[in-house]
Length: 179
Image (cartoon, rainbow, N blue to C red; front, side):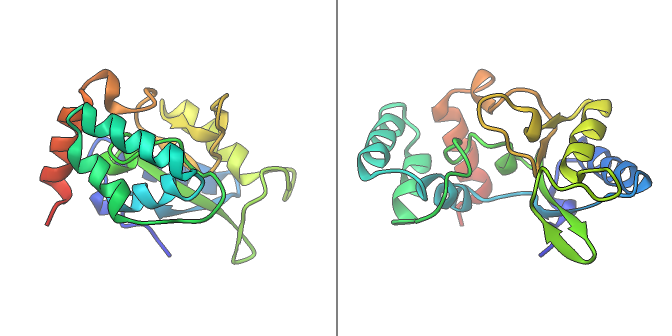
């Protein structure tokens, strides 16, 4: 599966394309598989590793902040199962803003997910992180609390919360994604 890079914001897309070209120049193919992600998709990922109590508490917190659309996204997707892959609830991931992408490393035509395997002395995820830093992007693999090696984003801030309230984020997500 390939991400539709045309859905990314114009300030991020060319930098991501340069990042991919720089990785290729070093002998590493990184392939974007996720760019713009809907709040419902984000809700599924967030819910998949949370207990019922955690989910109920987060939904109540979002409703209390006036972020009803975000809370409703979490409720609407229903039970999910899987390993933890994100700490970001809907609206708080830069994916919903078109400012983030997830890429996998291609080795001999297959997706390689190891952050330790070396091919010709290189690990694709580590090369991507190095090259992203050079371009002023924020590579998730270098995050201290929750490393996310396939992830790269435009901004260094972990979420839009420093710029907007939960209520404002919820309204913007509803405007962009509710059909």
